[in-house]
Image 1 (spheres, helix red, strand yellow):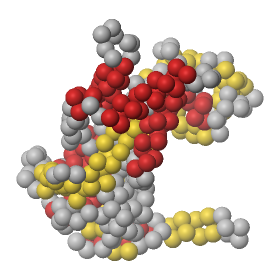
Image 2 (cartoon, one colour):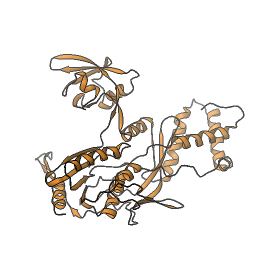
Image 3 (spheres, one colour):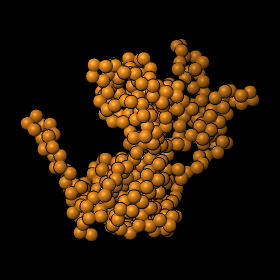
Image 4 (cartoon, one colour):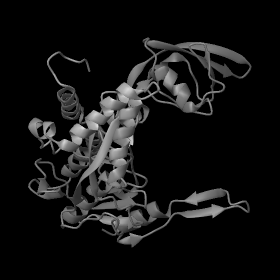
Length: 395
């Protein structure tokens, strides 16, 4: 931010802090909330804070008198990191700019790219209706260069970053296909990032896998339910295995598709008060639901599972969930990095906090895995899904 005449150093820094926090509250990690819209602290209180004044004076002194050149951005980042480390809490942490951008993209439900998935420079999948699908690129093509930049020594992430950071509307992708080298001019677009998979199983049982609680999840689930119900679905299996969370709002929205209006979805227990969150929609579905979970089912995924359990009698199959019962408040700093800190516990509708405890399955089931003599997995049987089908068939 630019210095403005008439403001003291303290005033400038306070304005920067307040503006950054007020305008920068954005996505969070695993489980986020946006129920707190104000800082709850006045400009006057900040101005009169002796410790803050002392910190600012030390900062100014170091900048002015330290014997070597100082990267002020890095020093402030270190100060922010130090504050968060002091709290000593697992989910309170600092994300640099790259980590913040990656998280925001993943949870937004969209990404900037061409529509390919690569592994060791090999295109392993091409999404339908994307620029890559229309360009002539094929699965198993080996990427050699992007915009004439050799990517042979670059990681998959670095290769993708060349596309993402391109300032042009298209990108040149050179691939090896057999003995040939081919170059394609591929448009760069904003591409939907699927958060779900779904299909109809036997006996009118629907299957819905939720991968992450992104900003577009509600519309994706609505479309999936509409299609499955149109095929005659009478029961539903929701697979939340390896789902580590996302937006709390998305968990609330998806839960509201099933639960009656006016029912309690969850509560937030903060420092000074507890806020109850109720279903405000007219959507309601009363068919039997079985939820598959494991020890990586966490956060927003647990919020959804608990809401469906306590309100609709959903049955849990699998393993005990992770047990993340805390909510993070987040804000983005001016350099694009992000700080997040725990601001509340969330309580399931029955009043329990599952932090460090998890959700307990009604029916325990583990995956069946076979290993060879070297300890390498040779086969996997999804006995958790089989158990879920068995349970829901009897409902």
